[in-house]
Image 1 (cartoon, helix red, strand yellow):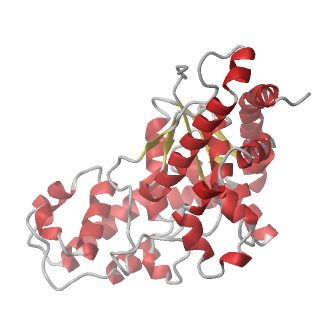
Image 2 (cartoon, helix red, strand yellow):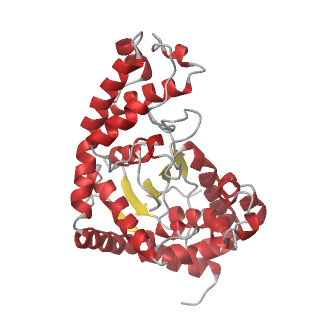
Image 3 (cartoon, one colour):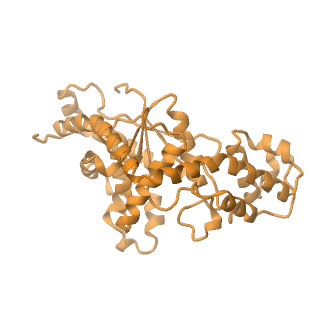
Length: 344
């Protein structure tokens, strides 16, 4: 197999408000990875329209994700920040991958089953074929690593399957076009991190989600200090004091979640947090968590609001990022067309 230079690709859908789970589970990793890797960070707006969207709200949401990237510390000069729909090669490669991927693979995707629910027959074809587009997003840039949450690992596995099948199906043509070994890498998921899975503040057994009807289930990156404080104080807990060690969090999902959030925001570990707060009542611990969350997230929210107030600036950044992304995407797509047998 060909050796590929390390390159990171990841994206966030412009749907709903970004919350603490998105920040700790994804954006913190983006900020760290930019120090060691060539990175592309995408606003995946083509994925957003797999379900109905209001066009005006969608445009605002695209800008909000871009603002969150930048406000959180992703450098638009060092990295490529762009929105997917401005790079047509994503859709082109997705169609080819629709013809490579197998129905059985897509039928096994758990996220489609969750999102389509019982009304599967009325779900869009786009929602069903979403994983093929995600594979195209990654492989268009020959990305080798993809920072994702645990719930997205299945999509990376499918991207690997698509890459492997393309490499096998077109092996002779790939060789004839001057490529030794496979044309696409087999991307690896990057899941490790202090808070890869942040849970709801109202139910420690459910993931923190944009779609949860309760605003008190999540801390949004755009929340001000008062909103953050109110949500932390109202977060569900149990009547027992915090344990002295991590082992004592078993069977206490809400306590485990809040300790995990504190650890992630303080760049610490749950054990270190419990060394400090073990034996304390939740009222004491929650106040410390409020202070920490406001200190860490307050400047991000303020910078997001400042950036969103200047949509022309964000649009110009996205256009420039898309131009840089096309510099990689276009020659790769031309080679794919040659391999498949198209005339261009």
